[in-house]
Amino acid sequence: MALQYAFFTGCVAKGAGRELLTSTNLVCKKLGIELFEMEDAACCGAGVGGEDNVMVSDTVNARTFALAEERGMDIMNICVTCQGVHKKAQARLAKEPGYMARVNDVLKSETGREYKGQAKVRHFAKILIEDYGLDKLKALVVKPLGELKAAAFYGCYSVRPHEYSDLKNPDDPDEMERILEAIGAKTVNYPGRLKCCGFPIIMMNKQNSLTLSGSVIRSAKESGADCLVTQCPLCHLNMDAYQPEIDETLRMPVVHIQQLIGLALGYTAEQMGMNTHIISASGALASI
Amino acid sequence: MSEITFRIYRFEAGKDASPRYDEYKLALEEGDTLLKCLNTIRGAQDGTLAYRMSCGSAICGSCAMRANGHALLACKTQAAGLVKNGVIQLDPLGNFPVIRDLVVDLEPFWSSLRKVSPWLQPNLADEPARERLQTPAQFQLIDDVTTCILCASCWSDCNVLEVDKKFLGPATLAKAHRFIFDTRDAKGRERMEKITEPNGLWDCTHCGECSTRCPTETKPLARIEETREAVMMAGITNSPGARHALGFRESMRWFGALNENYLPVRSVGFFNIPGLLGIMPVGLRMMLKRKAPPMFPHWIDKVGEVKRIFKRFHELRKNVGGAGTKTDGDD
Image (cartoon, rainbow over all chains, first blue to last red; front, side):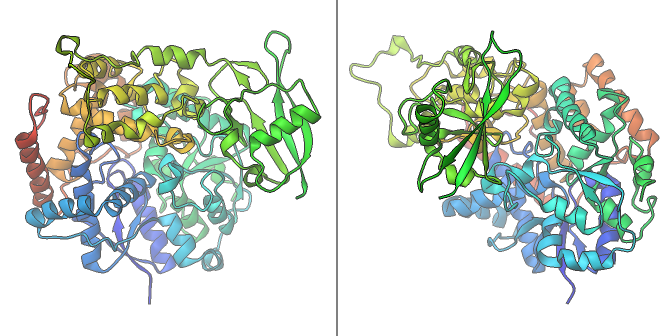
């Protein structure tokens, strides 16, 4: 039977990062992974929505988990911020049964739903490795990305705090690199790959935010990367959409990991929405 | 056990033009802590190697340093777990000037801590006959944060401090939390107002390095999150960070989803003309690439359920809240 997931798109993939949604849908179609988009799930809060009351945010997220349980499916995220926020909410609920009961009281009385603690939340990359298998992915590659030197950028919520990370070795992970190597790309190890992109403070302290993302981009460039690869549309926004304000000469393309997988599976750059990036990736992709 | 190589940062301020790495071979014995290894190297191989240490029991916080790029306590960490390809690399804590080898100048850390008046300031007009008591539940609020040993591991690996030395920093924000949540302290509101100024509470990116490197239960990121909640509850919302949080909540409550057109404007401030002009370039770039969020907001299906959850919590808060209950932005 095909793998099936309740698909939590996150808000950015329906707004400023629509190419992420398009590329994920096409890639999963080609892989034979069935996605059931959760049109009724609410925003995870991105760690901000609950800053004045974390229990509200946990209740809204418990509703999302309950919706997946009603479908009898686990959740697939395509944003590591959504993934990290969901994982933290689940950890808080699992840790204190009394807290979970209070959250469920509100959930039941206001929505008639209940979170039972069964739905797992995982990021696309984790599902690809754990459930689908990189050997199977490799077998479907029709256009290996041989000459492309890709710099994986993990995103804070996927690596820290360690207790909430899904990575085997969060201080030195290799999951993204394994996926990139499975589709034939060369990977670049660079000092900035586990750093913060600065996005969460772009509205509070733009200078610090862009200095952080600039430092990551420069680090990848100095290590010889052709492009940065993200698994979070927020990291993508800060490093792509704001890049001209950091330093116009950087010209470092930033792409979603799904887009590169799609290219390797035979989709065109246009189908993967490569033309929507602020920093053109056409030069980097010319080599493949 | 087999012999491994310690690759250690060497530098003396005022004498050396640039740092170097010296290598020392050492046979690890089972259970050896990193600190024991350093003591052996200094005692048997190189008496000029400088590092701090004192209690050897993860209480004093002196022996914090970086191993393989991450801050930790040398006395609390077994060396065997750090070996990577036969090597352990040791560096001084990050975000500090180096005095010599693994010894850093902690003055930026202390001067930041002093900014939040890290001592109890009770209401002296209400002096009790005996000591100021707390219930176990009241102490619970500060139980974790009082385990801080001021080792500066969090400071070393903080991403924001790497780019801005004016940031208050994780240990300082945790110390502010320790007194804001202390029921015996009378200066909570002043403390909250102080740390919500620029370069404070709202400048943290949530990168999680501080909590990951913290060797105690202080876990600064968790304390920062609790303090933000307290600040919002107290109605201290006139800052871009607080407006951002309010805007996010409003967007979630109205649409069930983030409205990317509304949130930036709400965060910057509706009448902040220079701020609004500042966000225009990115908006224009995105429009030109057909990347701008759709003009019309997107509502999730069954958004009424989410609205009811928010309404319920608003009512709960009104019922349990007092003078500090925030209503700004609520229906």
